[in-house]
Length: 227
Length: 330
Image (cartoon, rainbow over the protein chains, first blue to last red):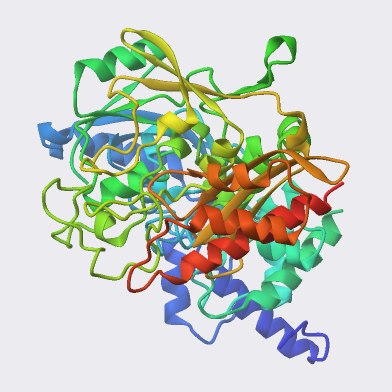
């Protein structure tokens, strides 16, 4: 089951980790996703982290007033996403998840169940993990949001991202952004003292592929390295 | 989701005034249940009054050894790991940690958890035409339907839904007091009087008035609550609602039970304080025989349905297990 990659020849390790990198970046910007879909063979990927949120925000501000019917008047909202100040206007009904995905095109955070049951939408708000699908965007005035797109440092993966690649902590990858955001918080909270504790404190993130053993390994490894 | 207006309350008074002025307004705290129900079309408020910024998130000691006050906006995760709660009321910490997931507990508040609505499938999905709780007079789809997760105690022919909260079960065992503030002033509601049995009005979950805002939950000083335990039995190891749960605390002196607190979850429309069981326990010697007798007494009036009769024996065994665990706690 476990595939640490230790036994693989260097060339294949590089290839595998670049594929994995691409897979992780499926959850990155739309451009990366499109590129990935085009070149399934997976050559080396350029990490495109941190889209120009200000620009997105500006576009939204420009169009909101003209197109919005009076019954769905939008409210101004300012918050910080992945370290960047964002000013948008949102319909009161917009969830944080929909703001990220639909308005800001940060499609890394996934909509799985949209009812707080699967954890695919997990993001960090002021350092704490939450289900972004059950939280209205408008309540997050002034908050600092970190999504999967904001974890890496330039081209250097966040240690938890790197551990998921190293330990093959995914199969289809759809739950992975939520798993990784949740794992980052889980480690920070200190709930990683045993396999059982990791399983319990990661139970809000479902993986239908059943990559759980490797996810636990990845979190243990990342926790040990960050200790 | 239906359109609604959004108001951010700056203080409790502003919140209750906004709510009093609009009968279909709802307070918004963590939103983990309300937003979900709004997506489902079960809740359709025309206004949300956001109370998240109110200064009601503290957990603090009440003066003169009077127990602990938990602010209504204290998040479930913060309460569960607060040293005062972990040390003095482990049953509450354990109950909170048994509920939902870490991400949900980071959003969910103490006040919101008290108001959590049932997870009865027939209530939660408007595609089902019958639900007296959602649509008074429409009937109960669960009565002759899929009722595996439904009530066995205190139910009526109108509704066999259960209260889904773990926290509430611990609060019931601890005789918590809910502090509320309305347009007309403040009042205290004992936890036993907070939630209602369904009777002929299953559409009304609690005795809270529409304009009333929960501001805090007080836990009285109960020295023996340091010996307490929450047992949750569910379909998977974590992240599932209780089929049956038990909050229990025992005051044992020289092998004899001086006082007992037992409450059940997953079995009734409200967190079920097991007074019959407590009456059997007090004065008796600690031991499985006593615990089983208490469990038999509590479940004597239980009534099961096609798919949930197993809960009656399950609840008895869960009571015995929970009490045995408490008895073995130093």
